[in-house]
Structure formats: structure tokens, C-alpha cells
Image 1 (cartoon, rainbow over the protein chains, first blue to last red):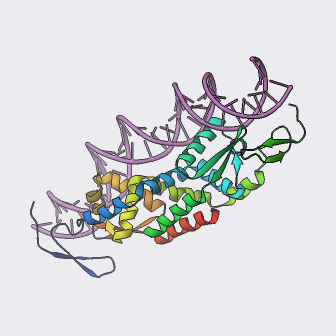
Image 2 (cartoon, chains in turn brown, orange, yellow, purple):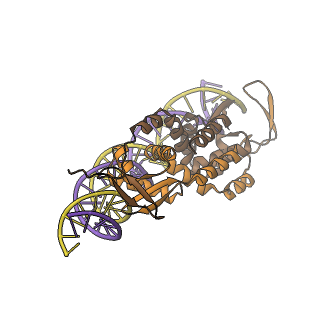
Image 3 (cartoon, rainbow over the protein chains, first blue to last red):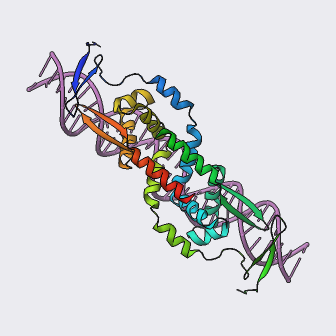
Length: 127
Length: 127
DNA sequence: CCGCCACATTGACGTTCATAAATACGTTTG
DNA sequence: CAAACGTATTTATGAACGTCAATGTGGCGG
């Protein structure tokens, strides 16, 4: 593959951008990638994907307003089977977004605000 | 179904909670649901699900640090086929998270910080 | 004008996920 | 102890998603 010398390209606004080689863009970005990988990307993604489902997001909204709800409250509110509700609550619990306490035969759930605040903070860092 | 009168239940910490009827929890929450549905849940969910994918989240991270990148930068950085990268960028673009400008035969992408800030603000509202 | 390049689109494939039915578990009540 | 209730788990199914190969599109250079 032939490699030409530097060349200048015209950008949309008419300015001249100086670039190197035959492939003006596609500059190496391994250094930046290192920083990216070091970031707590996994936890961020776990929280985001737990919240990305419409049912679970509505659950969190409802729970934030109600403060504390038991599982049967969700089954009554969401027109979903009890196993499905339990499934979603498990995902939210494993993501650290909700905490559950057992009282008698009921399980009361609440939002872990610290987790949501951490997510917000981590998003603010990259903006 | 028989409905009993008020009854008291024992909670985990030993306190007595007074509840009504045969089904102590599962109180009606339609009023709260109304408020929830009125909230901009859809946009919130769209942004969250766009960010929930590990590749797309890393793209946004990288893009926030780099400021502006063309599509071939991503194909070089992510070890993915060009159609796959294009697919992810389309989702991010349709979600309003990234904006694209065409310069020559390259397409340069940048993060719409306002969108991310809106998401952060909407999350802070419910916490 | 023809070939190359960056990027977008289409179609297909394998995987993941949400949901429901059936079942199991632990607690309360009679 | 047995029945009833709230909740968790298992299993199966259909839909959605990420990925790739092939192809299409538009701009740039020889």
C-alpha cells in the first residue's frame, strides 16, 4: 500500500485541517483507550442496563415516590405475572439499585439512592 | 373472598405495623402510577438503553475524551466490523446522544453533552 | 470516467432477554 | 399439622439485539 505525504483537507466550515499520511483520520488512540478501560465502565453499564428496561425503570420511578413497596404492590401495579415481577426485582437488586428486607411473609423493596447518585456522578465525570 | 377487619403484623425489627383488611399490603397506587406515566419516561429509557450496550458506552467514553472522531477511528479502536460500528453510531445518533457532521468523505461524530446532562438531571429528579 | 475510499444499508445468524406456566420454598394461620 | 399466602426458582418460548458478510451510495483522485 502506497503511503503519501501530508495533505490538507477542507472541512465543512471552510477551514483547512492538516493531517498526516494517506489516511488523514483514524489516528492511533490506544492511549485514550487505556484510560477508558480503567474507568469503572462495567458497573456503569450494569446500572444502565438494569434501568434500561421500561418495566424496571417504571418500578424505580414508582419506588422512589413510594419509598418502600412490597412485591405484591408491583404485581398489582404492573399487570405482570408475579414471577416476572420477581425476576425484574432480582435484576434491580443484583445491580445494587434496590434493597429488600423481609418482614413476615412480605418482602419490602426500596431504592438505594447512593447507587443512583453514583451513576449520576460517573456520568457527570465524562460529560 | 372473605375480608377480615384490621389486623396488626410483626415486622422484622419487632415493631407492630397496623394494616387494613385481609391483604395488608398491595394498597392501591393508581394515583402514583399516573404521576409516573406523566414523567418523560420514554426519553429517559431511550437514552439509558442506548448507553447500556458495552460497546456504545465505551464509544461515548472515548468520544467524550476525544471531542470528535470519525467512524474509521471507532472501527480501528473497537475491533469490530465497520457495519457494526455504523449500526451502533446510528443508535447513539437516533437517541440524540451523538451528533454527526459530514466533512468530505468522512463523518465526524461528537457527543451532545446537553442530552447527557438532561439524562443526569432527570435521574436526579427521582432520587 | 473509472477506481478507491468512507460510510450506510440489507439480510441472515446466533445469542440474549422478557414473559408466562408450573413448581418449590418459607411464613402465617386455623 | 395442614392449608393459605407471598415470594423465589425453573423451564420453555417468542421477540429483540449484536454481529457479520454482502451490497449500495456518494465523494475524491488518477
